Image (spheres, rainbow, N blue to C red):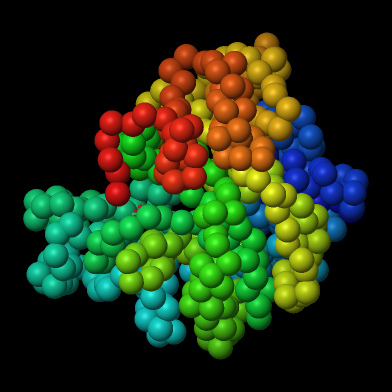
Length: 431
Ligand code: AMP
Ligand code: GLY
C-alpha cells in the first residue's frame, strides 16, 4: 500500500514510524514532513490550511490511504474533499471535527447528550461575558471558541485577570466559553471511532506546562507517558460508557457521524471523570509514547475506522510503559529560535528508544537544525515506567542544541504512585 501522511511534527514522525513497521505499507509519503521523517518517507511540501493543495497533492500521489495528523486540515474539511474524490482518508469530516474546532459547539453538545463536563456559559460579547461572571467562583476558566493551538484558555484567579482575559480572547465574531474550574488529575483518553462504535486504544498523561513541577505557561505539551495503571479496566469502561460512546451516538444522531481518533481530555474529579475538551486527532506528544507500545497494525486500525469495523478489531499494547520527553527551542512557548544546529542525533541512540523529530529541518550545508518551538520528542518503551524514562533521559543527555529546554520530571506523578524510589525530587506540589 501507498500511504500519505499529512503533517510535519513529532506526532507525524511517530505515525510514519508506526506505518513503516506495517508489512502492508510499501510506500510512504509525508507532507510536509520534517528532517527526521525524510529518513523514512518521501517528503513533499503542502499548505496544510489549503484543502485545494492537499487534494491536488493526493491526486498526484494516488495513495491507498491518507492519514491526517493535525487539527487544522481536519477543521478545513480535507477529509470531506479527499473522500468525495474517492480517496480513502482516516479522520473526521469537517462537521465531526467541530468537536475540536468549536468549544461552544462541544459544550452545548455535551449538555444535550448528558455527558459530564464543567458547568459553563457561552458569551458572544464582552457584556454577556461580564454579566455571566458572577455565576462562577474564582478561579474561572475562559476559553476562546475556535482552534488556538493550546493558547486559547485562561484560568483567571482575580477579577482583573478575568476582565483582561475577556478582552484578549473575545475577538469580533467569536464566542467565549466561561467555565467552572475543575480540580483533579488530567488524563488523555484515546478512542478509535467508526461513526457507530467507540473502542479504547490507550490513555496517556501529558505535561502541558513549560516548567518542572507544572509551573510556567502552557505549551503544546512537554512530555507524556503511557502505562496500563493510567487506565484500569473500570475507568476504561466508564470512559467508554459515559463519554466516548455517547459522543459517537450523539454525533450520529445529529447527522455528523464521527470517525477517527476521539481524544478525550478528561479531568478525574472526585465525583467522576469530566470532559475538559475533545480533540479529533492523535495527541502530541502522547502519540510518540503510545505508538511505541501499539502492537496492532496502524493500517488495520485506520481501515477499521473508515470501514465501520472498529468493534471488530483487537487493539493491543505491548505490556510495560512508554514515555516521551520533548526538547524545545529557546523562547518556547512565547517564541522559538530557529536555525540552531542540533548535536548528537546519530550517537545518542539506545535500544528501546526513538528520537522523533518535530520542528527540525536540514540546513544548506546538510546539518540538522531547529525549525520550531518543539524540536524533538525523545521516546522510549520498557518493562516499567522508571526504565522507559531512564532510557529516554539517557538519550536526551546525548543531544544538545543552544537554548535547549526540557523537563526532567516527565511521569513524576506515576513514579510517585508506582515506583516512589525512582521519582525525581520536585519542590513544588502540583494538584
Ligand atoms: P483545553 O484546551 O480545554 O483542554 O484546556 C487546556 C488546559 O486548561 C487543560 O488541559 C487544563 O489543564 C486546563 N483546563 C481547561 N478547562 C479547565 C477546567 N474547567 N478546570 C480546570 N482546568 C481546566
Ligand atoms: N498534547 C495535547 C494535544 O495534542 O493537544
